[in-house]
Length: 192
Image 1 (cartoon, rainbow, N blue to C red):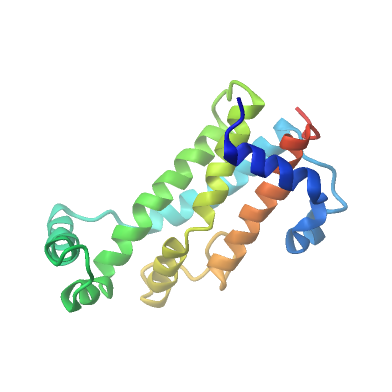
Image 2 (image 1 turned 60 degrees about the vertical axis):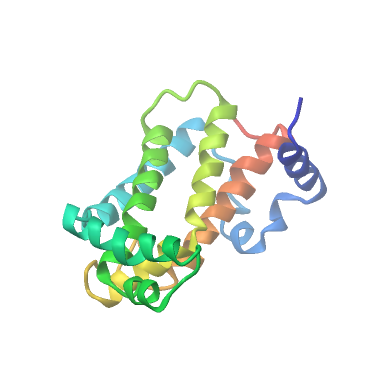
């Protein structure tokens, strides 16, 4: 039995052609749909880019984690799940930017490892992983933290081949995943 989300995606896929995403379609419209080996190669390329980015983003020390817990998490919880001046001040810190970026990059890397190395059991599982990746790429808080880390010169300005508009460029990647992998899969057009 199909879930509501699958039914909605299928309806969208059958209603709109692959060029429904003109920004992405214009980049990929003259290229054939990628088969599994092509998608695996793309995941490997992106994995190398994200591994480089992840290596630049430091993990929080136990002291930094305790500080974030006190100044941000506990502060919001103790205020009835509301932001306070103290919590907002903590959000301006380097520690907060690392707190936001590192776990999200870890998740993206986990997905890219699965897509590039693992023996994905079937196309449905593969497309579920790609769709999760598209969702992660559209996380604005991640790209705001990355932008902040670039401005602080904590990481290189060139991120995954882009020197600006990190959020917008990664959203386009996510749209490409949906337009070139997920929708064709739902339409039964995605090569094995």
